[in-house]
Length: 160
Image (cartoon, rainbow, N blue to C red; front, side):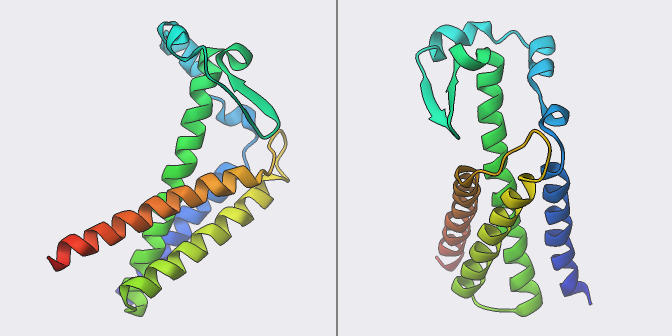
């Protein structure tokens, strides 16, 4: 029975992601916190030159302000971290409950993580003031890929 509790961890994490994706942007906006608690204006000269397009919108200090610019990277970094953890949870569940070897466990974990990232973006498309965007699936997949590399490195160190 205990080995199946690892699946509960993955399922609970999926629940956290689902809940967060169902929140309108206004409930997750951290710009007011950044504005009220931190003075990030010293970063403007360092980052003011940066400008790129993401999901048909300009991402720059000029267009978003320094707080919005920093928030963009915090939000995308959160995507990476959340799906990094999801892959790790899937991997632990597969290794403990199914006792399969390394490469199949990592492969299945990666597939499940990317599949859920895709479903999550689809779900987000139904949330007010949120959009589904394939670029976020790529960012989520990058987080999963980082977890794959970490797991492979850990395995390599363990067998030495």
